[in-house]
Length: 183
Image 1 (cartoon, rainbow, N blue to C red):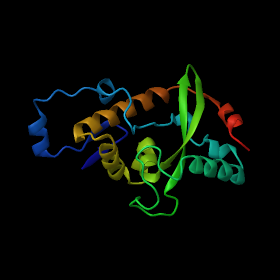
Image 2 (image 1 turned 90 degrees about the horizontal axis):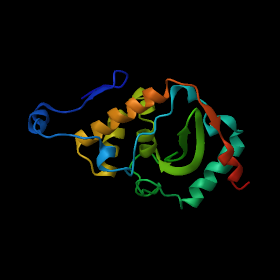
Image 3 (image 1 turned 180 degrees about the vertical axis):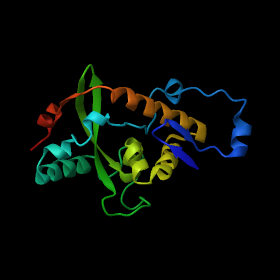
Image 4 (image 1 turned 60 degrees about the vertical axis):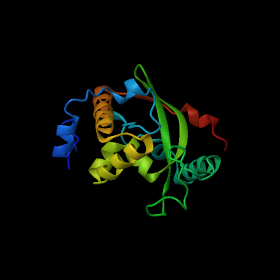
């Protein structure tokens, strides 16, 4: 399989799949299904390394993320796996993911969610690609959303296009959501 993330040309179709699907018309997954259960949420390049985790002391981040895990009953809030049903390494299987809203030139933290490592790889597909886990992430995206390969590819390409557009500008990052977190 071939993955070309930078060029925004992702090809994972096998020869027989290409022939079989030539007559089908594919539309953006978002056009068919307003909000998929699991979706790419690529952070604009200007905002890399400006996560909540990087802004807090390790002890503060650990307190926050553990509260988020507990609030989610130690279950992935996207795919529903728990420590017993998660198929990968159990160490560090649950992650605390930041949910951002983009308005004008503001990148606003709106929520924190407990998600499994594989859902986190999908959210940050570029990172998964850099560390060689993109195929696992892609397969997880398909499984969680019940998509075929072409639907998944459309979503990934759309996600990369959105990332490229968002990466064309600088963002003022708003972390005020953290003020709502219990201490």
